[in-house]
Structures are given as C-alpha cells and as structure tokens.
Amino acid sequence: MKNKQLYDYKVFKKATKIILSKSVKPKDNPTAQMIRYNEATEKLDIIGCAKALNELKIHFDGTNVKKKSVAKQMMFVKSLRILAEVYSYHNGDKKDKWWENTAKILKSINISEDHERFTELKNFFSRRN
Image (cartoon, rainbow, N blue to C red; front, top):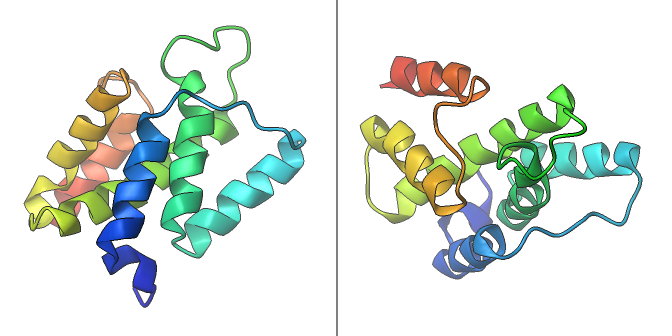
C-alpha cells in the first residue's frame, strides 16, 4: 500500500466521523454510485470508503428492506475490509485483530456481524493470519 492516506491519523479520524454520522442518501444515479465506490476501494481512498460505508449501511441495518442489492452489499464489504485494516493499523493491532476490529466497526453502526455477507470476509481475515 503506497497511499499516504492509510497512515494519516487525521484522515482516519475524519473517516470515523463520516462512518458514525447519519446515513446520507447519494444524489448520483446508481451506476455513478457504483463507479464512485469502486474507484474509492481501488485507490484505497479512506474518505471515499467511509462515504461508501455511510451510504451503503442502509442495506444491512434494516432501513432498506424493500430493495436488496447484492452489488451494493458487496461494495460495502469491500470498503469495510479496507477500513478494518486501517483501523487495525492505527490501533497498533496485528492481523489477528482484523476481524475483531471489523466487528467493532459494525457494532458502532448497529449492524450485526452475523449477516451472511460477512461470513466470507471473516474467513478471508482468518486465512490471512
């Protein structure tokens, strides 16, 4: 990872505030949203990933029960993985804490870690230890 944002504590704190704030409804169309989310995760843009979590958490917290978008859920998971690793880095934790820190992030935004979409992420973190 060669992105300076990953190691900047101020960027991490700003991202935390975005994640914990009230969910924001995106103003762009769904295709543009997915492009924006993908660019954020591909570039390891911490603020972009935090905005993705903020906008997409409605797909997990019970707010958006009408429409289930697997693509949006997976983009949430991708952003969550990046932010969990950054969270671990700033807490001085080793790889063995990645899932534990993921669970802390989910709990802070009132999402159960038992959701089926997180099973693969939990296994991924377990294999990386």
